[in-house]
Image 1: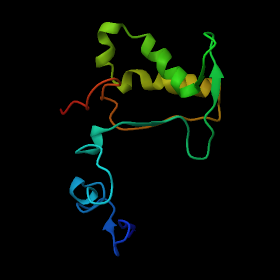
Image 2: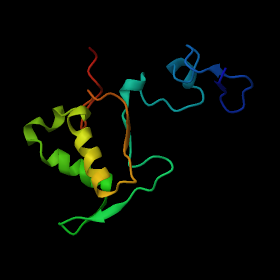
Image 3: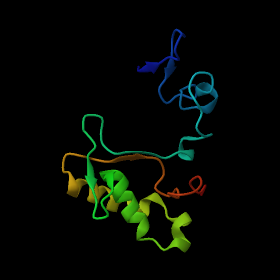
Image 4: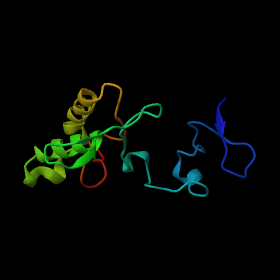
Length: 126
């Protein structure tokens, strides 16, 4: 069985158990709490841990990372009136395709709900 233990404590929690660090009650003593549940946060990364994220200079002369540029490009295609409602699921595949087209050895990564709005708020609770 794989276990993890908070720093300074012997033993550990079974991964996936109700006492796992993923349970908000267990994590609060030794791990910063971002939200009440995992779906309350969204994590995106410009590349996988064994890759290097690349930058480029756009047609505007500004240098950005490939992920930042792709994200801005996708969001600029959305009408301003809908910007706060756009879910990650609507733009993520375009972001991914843009980064991987520019650099085939860079793979963006996302954890969280594709239903969550990119700009505002938690994922809807269906």
